[in-house]
Image 1: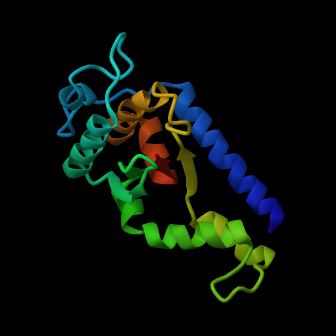
Image 2: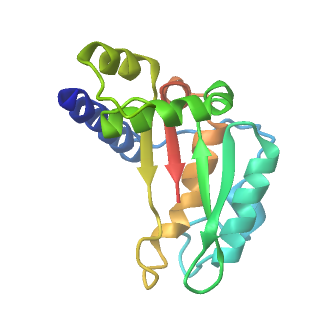
Image 3: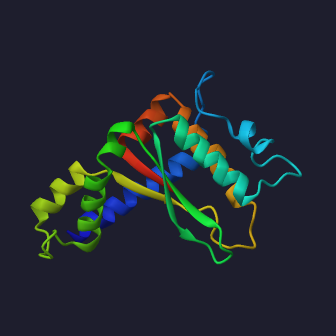
Length: 178
């Protein structure tokens, strides 16, 4: 089962690199708000930095407008702000999110729900049944405000794009943005 965890981690890394290496082209018409419409400027535009409150407001608006993101409040930051976690995938995957969380946990720990080690056959089946969990953290250090500016753009692109690549990403992975 150890090889399966390495393979799973490799697939997740490949998906993350693919996401970042090629721009996902959004559709011309979308009900989801653009980052500019909420932030007042394009993310990463020269001489602009959206505040954490503005970025949180954008993620809440995107969550309200589409069934492809799901927003979770994961607690306060050291400065007392609410920390948000956005999970982006297909609507079908999000409906089955608890199942995919259980699969991911079992593969990560090499244990089933009772705590017994996974057999190779069970681990292989879980890898087939599961989805890659791709974690992208935009705000690792509080004194680095620029990386988080890209989060709204990436979220909007993943939620609104109808390219084959974007659909495959949503169908085969669960992207977690913090």
